[in-house]
Length: 253
Length: 258
Image (tube, rainbow over the protein chains, first blue to last red):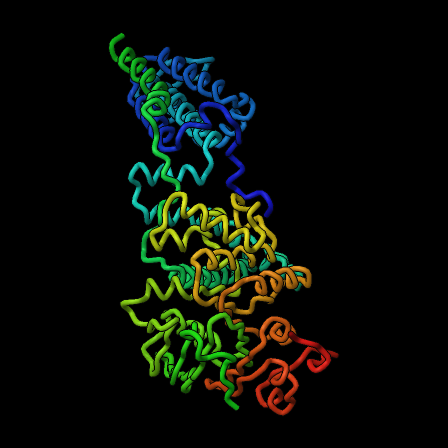
């Protein structure tokens, strides 16, 4: 329980990228991903240029390549899906290494792989240079409804509490000789889930009571009013601006 | 056996409850006319068996429950809908489970929540948070997430969250529950060092004797006794009648209280 999940992705540091206000980084990442997705898949060199851009950001943020690549593994299910496409897609076929593969499927797979990998890499970079907390305040500053931000921040705060509760229930079950083996025991697990739901619901009521007792009226007070300077915006904009140039060239060439 | 506080005349009492009766919507009546006055600066223990109506009474003090008969006033201000914001600033309730009380991602933000909800911002807010954390000795933990603290530390932060609102009266629900003896003593030292009115709901009779010169016994929805804590704890028939039991080997008469 010691290390909260907030630390899994975040890699603390003092690089210029870490120091940028979170809302600048979120906007820059979002802009970058949109541009990557908008680039025509035939402009293969453009994706290489995007990868170089991300590499430059990672270098500025002093994120080691190994760290980044390990976090990229989350993409594997999509990769599997992409690898299937050349085999199942319809249309014109072309022989590759003795296999007959669909041309449109190959393009589709390339499209999913290239854009997906770049998108995931950009998100991993954002997550590893920005604390979860800061991401939320950034989203709030960018105009995400405060209710959604509140829900997300409660998830961060109570994730560990609920997990600990689940673990205690599991310890209590096993201490009385219960071991989940096969379908016959699913009923017990389902009742555990139900009990956990009720407990969490009741905790929610008690938390709300405590909030109301301290003057909660429906909105969270914004504490850290960190406005971004023009220079910080310009710095953050370097990534999407260069990406825009690449994207435009991708259409032109 | 109604005892009046030491100096009732010299200031508006922090808390005045009169004729308070309340039945829950399901018909179960929890309070049958409670009268209680707590003078400014007093530390009073609210004792009583499980189901005596202690929590119900506490939730009336800041208007979470209401709609029954009787009145509650906090430092002269009646608990009524139009005053809820001010009442909730004046009455600081520390709930039993610190995980319920501490709902923000960091200690600092949690302590800032109450004053920020009251409109405080910037340096003034920062100063208020620092002062409150200092008073419970937790200033070094301001940027930690609450779930990384020990239980005793979380309880102390929970006290800080209400101290930050500079309340007229501090209401503690079972402050010593689940604490190891060292944390228990640390919390006692903190509570003694505060110059606010304290109403402490507890089953921990030695703790009440240690901290509160005066106690009231709430039993079956009425105040059954009100007097110096030591006198009440030594009154065996009274204690038996209200299911109050001292820990094994503890003799309240043997302790010298200030």
